[in-house]
Amino acid sequence: MKYGYCMDLKFLNEQERALFDAVAEAGFDYVELPFSELSALSGIAGLKKELEKIPCRACNLFFPPALKIVGAGMDSNGIIAYLERMLPLAAELGIESLVFGNGGARKIPEGATREEVWANLRLIVELMDVYAGQNGIKISVEPLNRTETNIINSYAEAVELTFGLKNVGAMIDSYHVAMENHTYEDVVKYPEVLHLHTAYPTGRMVPSPNDPAGTYDEFVRAVKQIGYNDKISIEGAIKNPANVKAEVKAALEVMRGWFG
Figure 1 (cartoon, rainbow, N blue to C red):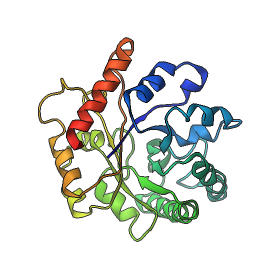
Figure 2: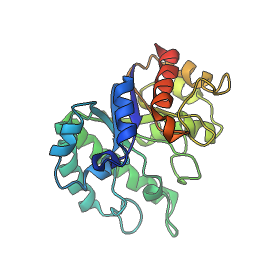
Figure 3: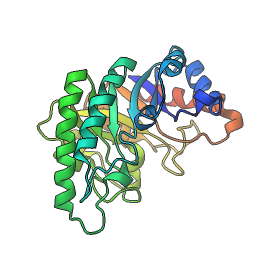
Figure 4: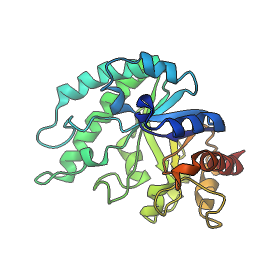
């Protein structure tokens, strides 16, 4: 298993240097960065230099907020242009996995139907499949809880949306599973999981050895049952920024205890 940590790009301006350095020093295998923020960089030389310390193997937050991806104003040409520009950049940076969450951008807007938005999303993942294949990248659709979006709230929906595609599939975030009170039955039924996120559910915090016993048992059991052995990223906040090194190191040790 490869262990990663989700963070934004503030470390490029020294604002989040402590977290970035702590993750690298603790022995994480990679960082997971927001893909849409990469699109706003004027150049990537500085980022490449930083990533010599620890690579970026995955990215989340696929689309920039300004790009309309569903509904009456869906910008198909803008989506294609974005894929044409950004997927080669991902490959250049050594990114292997991209996560399509974007809960607010993909939600069913007022005046639209679920069927219309589903068709929009299916077109998007079909386009993603083409460009991901051309650049040797996998893209995973992230099921999000209902406080974040009103469509694709379960793993089964993500599997259905991406059915038949070679380079786009579904992922699991244990936080969202907990928020929705879902089980992992569908994960076992459809085991082709492309990526994992995790966090302690209450407050969406980093895993800790002090978390209640059994918190992650169903998640870990399902992951082991399907034989997944790729990337898992923490997507959770530090409890005490003054204790960032210890919390990050402890979180990594917790996950290694799950999978070795």
